[in-house]
Length: 485
Image (cartoon, helix red, strand yellow):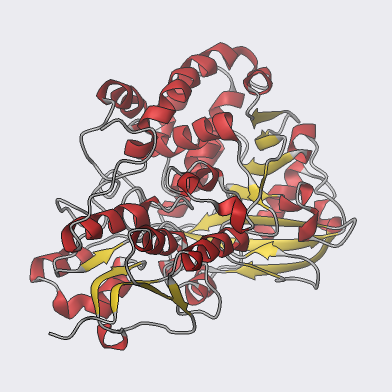
């Protein structure tokens, strides 16, 4: 057999594809990264979507998991142009009474916003914050025997609860609403088992490190990863959309940063009938409707904390948020949807002309929805920031169909690569000894459709590459820093 042209080919240049390519290239292999679009990045792209000079994050915007990623922290990304900027308040959650609960690296500031529930919240969070450095690699990895079983069990017992159960320990609405807003990042009904995992991870990371934005847009994360990859010898090809294996150069290992739908299209003929059946049964979750605004001034939130926060969760009480998510999962479009809003230009002046601002927001909608949710989203913002509509200079929107056209991994507008409920938390995309291996030798899945799921952390790509290195190249990587296994 003739020597392959490449040791490994990675398809897709989202954060997981880039992480996989870097992990392989670091071992001295000859690695090619193939991207279908003209620019790399997947969900890490930025563009002038509204008016000239207003830079918007097309998909992901706030990056607590990127800044705290065990893999990304091993890379010299600052040397390749990446700078994170940290808002003084990571996230704020306004209520109809004019008050706002806050997530902050200053725990006293958070506790001061939670009224009578301050001590209960501290007792919930502090043990998890202390344990996080020891359990992060297991929390952001496949199901396995943890390095610190007792500490992981402490986390797991809380994380496996539905958010609706977790918040019952609080007496007042402020802590309940704050955690419900965190849990809504799970993009599923808050009554579902394990929705607390998302709420707790985001809260713990926020208290320990904050929720930063990359200076110059989310695209800068992708650029820094790509610059490092090419600096160690990697190759990148863009404008090459892969729909079948025959398009690829010869290789020993193939890693695909795609979801099961595209995986079947590209390589389904190579898979066993049982594995194909499992992929066909894979479930996608709710979609999102996204809006970007060019603004004449900062959003005039009534609560002062919201005017300092990089992220604002708009949903009022835990009950209102839970109802919104439940209705959406049932196929309806709530009149008062839960809205996730980012204000990058508050801390990054490069995002807008001097004196002007940008804002980014989305709400959840049924998968595949084409309904225009602009009025509902803006109504929710106006509810907590009277006069907001008067500051809008221009807007740009994406419905679920437009999001999928922009990024084929967003099936029906699902930005998590498949619903991350208890059935697909660790067994995504199929129940196998390793979720990254397909049934075809040498073909691996490295997308957010594998553990630990959505988010800009690169850990899906890292774990898939680690698996390929062991299987194909007989290279065993040492555990990432902080793991004693």
